[in-house]
Each structure stands twice: as C-alpha cells, then as structure tokens.
Image (spheres, rainbow, N blue to C red):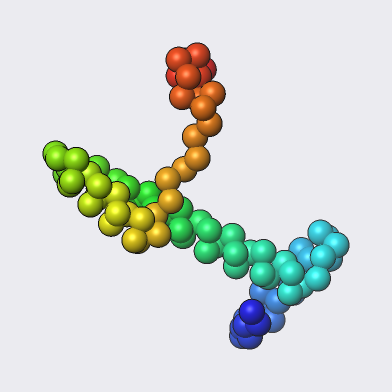
Length: 93
C-alpha cells in the first residue's frame, strides 16, 4: 500500500538522518514506524477491552462464550503465553 504524507521539513530531516544511520530507505523506515504505531494501538485496544471485560465476569458458560466471541469480534488478541510459563515451576520464576 502506498500512502502520501505531508510532514514538516524538520521531521523529514530527522527521519532521513535515522534512515541513513540505520542504512535503510526512508520509505522503509517510515513504514516500520507506522506499523509499530498500529501494533501498539492494537495492543492498547486489546488491553482496554480485556480490562473492561474483567469488570463484570460472566457467570454461565454461555455468557463466557458470548464475552469471548465479543472480544474476538473486536479483534482482541490475547497475549501468547508459553507452556513453560504456565507450569508450576514457571509460576515462581
């Protein structure tokens, strides 16, 4: 996808300097930064939705399934937790 952005000359200079330091193309750096912001917002949205879902815990299995379906419909993704982290030894690390 191609996006055209109007940014200040100062911001463009700073981005170009950083791209030069990292040895990558300016457009690649800008895309990486934008994608990072999108991922961060998705994580923030997921956290807010997760916390709000925790305020009123569902009581029945049907309510729990409906709550999980609502989170999935919002695009909320639970963080990955390794099996090791959930083991009894991992709980105390």
